[in-house]
Image (cartoon, helix red, strand yellow):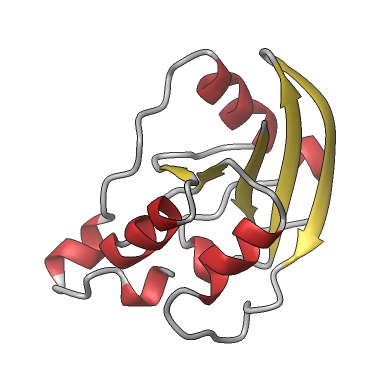
Length: 128
């Protein structure tokens, strides 16, 4: 299984999880077997400066991810990930290590639209 995590910096397991996945600077890709992380890599988000709806989910799909973890995510983004067969999970905070342990231990739920998306009726457009 490959888990993608939106992050603010390039510090491997110590990278800080980003709240807005579409506007994060980097993604961590963690290859997991069972409940054990085999390898991680940090890649730049080519859409950091801007993107159209669906571009980031397609990019994550092309990286072979099965799961996308972020602090928050809008409805549109959740839908795009689900169309690609990627399980979106939100509520991630802290470091990559903390979030991976939480997810692999069953402590994270599948994605719910972030408050900004609901409050402003964005439908998630600014998060995908």
